[in-house]
Length: 176
Ligand SMILES: CC(C)(COP(=O)(O)OP(=O)(O)OC[C@H]1O[C@@H](n2cnc3c(N)ncnc32)[C@H](O)[C@@H]1OP(=O)(O)O)[C@@H](O)C(=O)NCCC(=O)NCCS
Image 1 (cartoon, rainbow, N blue to C red):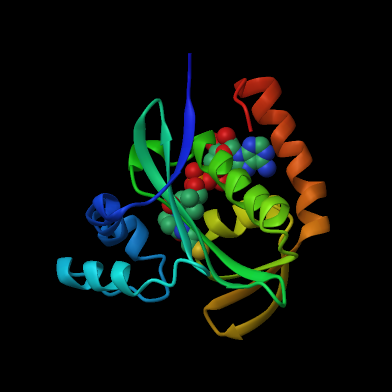
Image 2: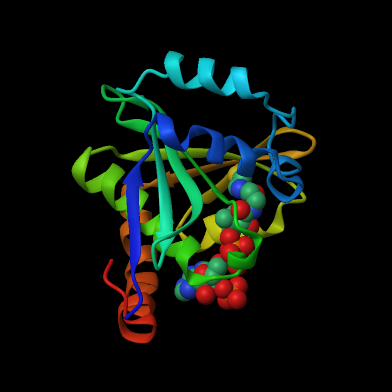
């Protein structure tokens, strides 16, 4: 039987996250594309404000595949930013990536009761733009020549995610 899981990261995961984040297919799509050093990763984790930043690792059949995260959570304005990277290249184009998105947005909108998500994506990152569009994101305006600025309202997410959940439940036969 197939399994998909999401777990909050601990200090034991941070070097795996760094390894993934430094891989070319991930780093090239990040707005800050610098290579991350081991000690910087430790500092990043220690300095994290765990109340408004949450990092998760998603796995397929117990194998760690990638990271989804939410940051800049503003509980007053009910807004957040979301991010994802699939670390294991053999899982690019796999449903586990959209499954992980559904888990993090359901958590953000339904459990944390947030209302709006923001994302900033490079123009050339067609995969991420397509994925975010299918989640219900609206493309707002360009903030810089090579960046797209996207917004996702809870209502639009609820509409868009219904179809994706149906696909995951009916075809993939995985719980969401
Ligand atoms: C962004 C990233 C996680 C997207 O993962 P991906 O696997 O390339 O995403 P896809 O859009 O191909 O979706 C994966 C699979 O989910 C399923 N899926 C995606 N959208 C779907 C939808 N609307 N309905 C049903 N299934 C869907 C499909 O099975 C799809 O595989 P397919 O493309 O062969 O049909 C990945 O490309 C990545 O890690 N890139 C580098 C980092 C990055 O760019 N992060 C985002 C920065 S903002």
